[in-house]
Length: 140
Figure 1 (cartoon, rainbow, N blue to C red):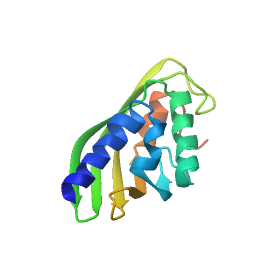
Figure 2 (figure 1 turned 180 degrees about the vertical axis):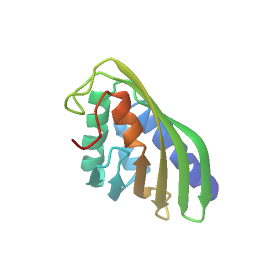
Figure 3 (figure 1 turned 180 degrees about the horizontal axis):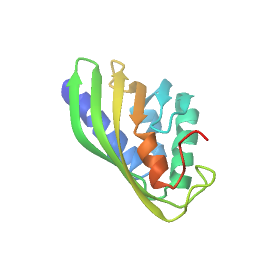
Figure 4 (figure 1 turned 60 degrees about the horizontal axis):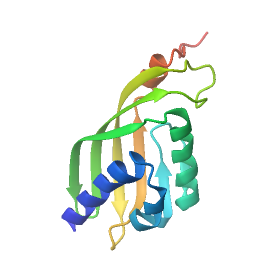
């Protein structure tokens, strides 16, 4: 099962995210998926995931996920990630367009018996991302 889970996480990032292959959602994600993205939004189910990923793609058309480290144990996995892209859309009001970004994150996954992802909880270094986009995060 460990090999199957490792392959699923890699396909989740390499194919579904990096290639925007939403046709793989049913194959890789359980219907009741609980998903928290690196930007802090929480969604449920296939449609919620696709809406979130589309929002990211609209803001960063070349968004790329790189797995820096992957650990799998039983029916769970954890990944250390680097995210890169160019901000082109209106994902954050007031953010500069054309800015190349890079930030770090970590993701924690749970799987069902068929190795579909049932839960993905992702944390991203939002402070670093927002600073790169020229957004002041200091209280006035």
